[in-house]
Amino acid sequence: MSRDRVHCVDCREPIPSDARICPHCEAVQPSPLVDVGVIVAGVFAFAFGLILAMLTIGTSRLLGFLLLVVGFGLGVGGYTRHVDRQAGRRAR
Image (cartoon, rainbow, N blue to C red; front, side):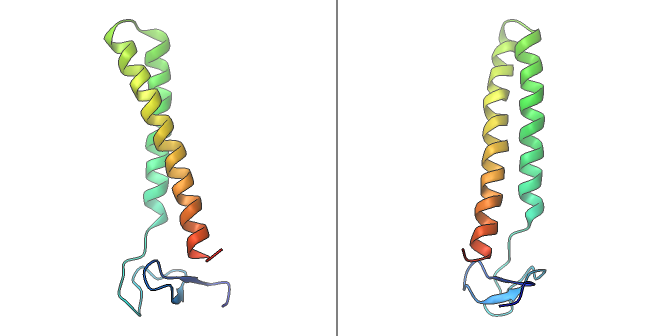
């Protein structure tokens, strides 16, 4: 298989790397932009939560800690999902 081909997420047949729909089974291939959006949202939530948790008191501080946890989960989870998807598409 050449460098510009990857495996379909459903039927595992080789397809061009820029194809968004598999020509064999017509399954929609995942977009890496969704993973990037999740990671960016996670980093933003983490940073904003850190500011809230450090500089406020009361309920705002609790909201800051909640944003810290959610932001960390989104950032790390989005990155690992991206890495897993890339490895799965390359069939490693």
